[in-house]
Length: 244
Length: 261
Ligand SMILES: Nc1ncnc2c1ncn2[C@@H]1O[C@H](COP(=O)(O)OP(=O)(O)O)[C@@H](O)[C@H]1O
Ligand SMILES: [Mg+2]
Image (cartoon, rainbow over all chains, first blue to last red; front, top):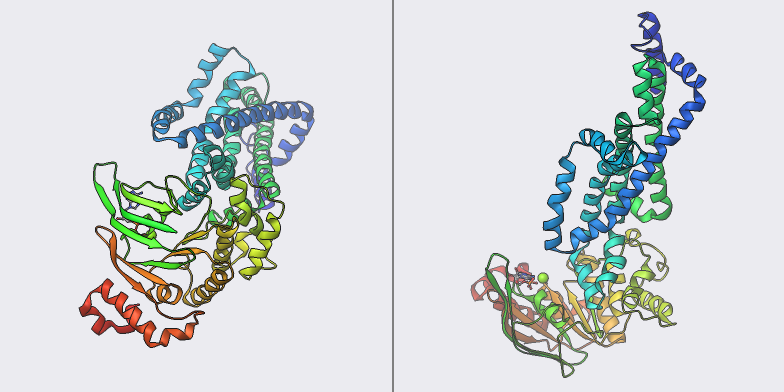
């Protein structure tokens, strides 16, 4: 399927003699990207680092936040509106302001990545924590389980399939967030490369960066899937039946 | 021994309304007696079990087990719900051991006990399977083992066979009687099935709703060990007819006959 698409692309570029800056042929993207393979590699690593920092930050923040959010009606009434507010801020508009406030470093990019990725994760974990059957919670209480035991031995394990569906969304969004951050402020990274390459009409390199970004997204997503399969096989199986 | 005296339970909803789930219920259950609660939905059967388990407090009245007032969960009680509620991430043995883990009891013979219980309910060979690999009936057997692992004196069962098909249900009823004979316990058993209640129990407590209260207590004078054949006996029919009449009213029993079960 993909091969057919690439072939049609290649053929039409030649057939209609499209200018390179509009739509480069796949073969040209390949050769031009290969020519700058070293710098492409460096940019990919830079983006990967921003993605991972933002993704890890969203995990570190989301888990306790979801626990807090589901711990009491009062907590959820206080925190939930705040969460929704952070989501209503347009991240693209926030990025330049963060750069002014925090300086042109990696930090604003990581923050944007985090802000894009963490919300669906918090919601997924919170839903998971609340999905525990009421009978099971009562069973725990009938054996005098403490709040901590209830969380660690019943609620959190129960939430694992939900956590992983949240993680899959979060990792995909982390890549988006990192690129948004790089568009606004960066001296490296694939997002930066796309901006600078198109500014000089080096469209083949921009396409190369775009393809690398997609590959990066797919690979990271699959890594999350594999981690789930290896460490929580029961969760991976339950999801197949629930979400398909 | 369980003693319930003038027990009432009122639930208050957040919008200010209130529901009288139980009103002035008095009841005694002797050691190792098998008692069933039957009655229409909403008559307070589950509430009664949750009060006995110390999971909710009474609004009025007294509740004692072996001479001590029940104010919090006790460790000598096992509970079985309608759905097995096994932990999907733990194998069957770990599921059975779960109560001991929660109570931080690490008896060295715990695993052996769990395996003995699983053998007792016919789950030998499934010790390291996961819940999803078992049928509903098998999962419920495992849930019964989980309720028995700490060797409680009292077993509370809330429609434990309600989610099973009719055939599995009959098999499970007989299994429960066998387990109870080998491991005598006080059992309070909630069911919607009148025949099931009569087949299993020494006494059947018939409850009625709004407010939940005891309508009648029916003694079952059928000798043990019980078998499914006894359902045809005259005493059995007499018991079910009495219960049915109490639940549905006198008029309906004439026309509905056995179909009302
Ligand atoms: N936690 C609760 N909060 C409010 N009302 C409740 C609660 N638990 C039970 N009730 C009410 O108490 C009544 C008895 O419920 P329940 O004991 O579950 O009945 P049963 O098990 O016989 O069907 C019902 O009207 C039910 O709505
Ligand atoms: Mg009930």
